[in-house]
Length: 223
Image 1: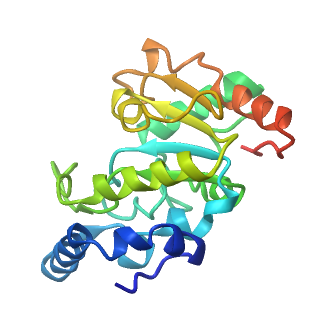
Image 2 (image 1 turned 90 degrees about the vertical axis):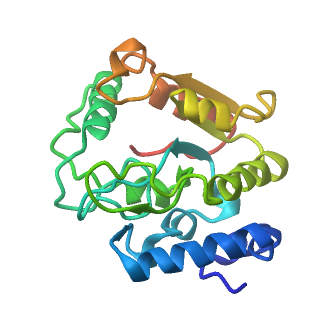
């Protein structure tokens, strides 16, 4: 199957794209876009991969599925396009950044594309979702999770010195097999307002990430 995705990822994931499960997934996704509102826009489904090629990944942040309200989702987990109000979890991410760096983040755009361009893979476990109230998770169980598991497996097998920032039990379970001897795995509760106070605030992940990258001779992320 000829999937429109950045070339290094196309090579690494070639086996997934030729598999039976991915053919069924692609058929489901095409039908969903034809029959209703789906987020993100079709051109942005693989935005995380297109902005962060395989050999440039130095940080992985895992989300669950895209935002399901209008104008929010654009293919990068936790991120929203320029001019869109910050969602609650992103507000808490910026609050943690302010605490760690003593700089204002709340007046910034919620567009995290500049993170992705520096090597931060902003990966949702499920890459599409139906739009509307109460539609979160509506495309789960269709094959996306198997696909994104393969993404993490390929990174774990073919790369090292990557920082995995795993927020919440879902992300921690999904990347449980990452070799902690060859990478840095940072775990904390999810930044959602329901759980951020249980240990996301004060986790220090952003500074710890950059300290590790610098120790590995890699450029820190300009958050």
